[in-house]
Picture 1: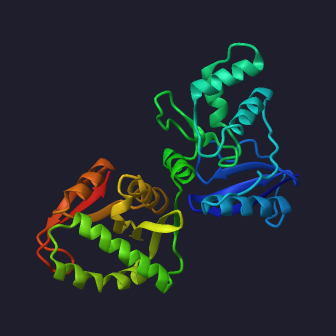
Picture 2 (picture 1 turned 90 degrees about the vertical axis):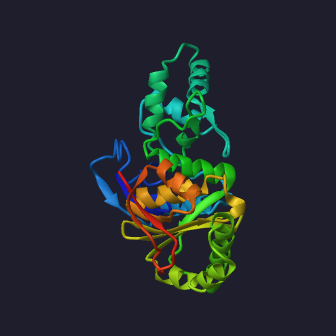
Picture 3 (picture 1 turned 120 degrees about the horizontal axis):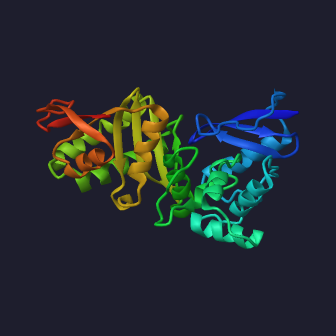
Length: 310
């Protein structure tokens, strides 16, 4: 009998599978090879002890904490696939290896030359995402290369492990969080919005908490327990995206935008024309201008560019 359960991860809904004592599958919804090899006699059983252990491990992992020993894992696959997946488990958290390294290690274990294509195929069919860390395998030049769950997820997992950047949706927005977000907003604006006067910044700051209260979905990026950025989403529109000035260059902006586009379906946004750094960032991320206004949404003389993702 195969048992299944769901897990709501910060990177999207995931399906867990087990033989009753060990984890046999973990797939993100919509990923390649989703539920591949899952037996037909499936029974949903969310309260299995192994699922509770996996959820606890994943909760700690995605919070950027040390999750402790791995939950028990059992593979269903060919002996060669087992060898590749076991080799993946040898890659320490925070470190990476290349596909070439992996081919060499497998060849040494087999005592015979190994096909790079066969190794790559086995990596791509890893049935236990995250816990068996195929996201730690890079291309020869350090490129992220492919990932069954999407390259954006691979980037997010590596950012969490290597730079301690975690992103989660803030369902609740207590006053302490709103205060931290408002301070991030001000530091960001002072670093990037040179066209605003001091009076403008003070006036707009008074409106920011209400914006946090009203935006339907709010993503918060943290590093070492400190808020470093946020993004607000209203339907398919990116309502806001700001980074702490001290966090620029860490990749958090890209992580927030990819989370908004890939998970929430964001296709449109607006940006101040007088903030060329932001305009260039969105263009680099695949957005292009389709409309311009002479004033912003408050009627102030700060032109906005409305951009759409192809």
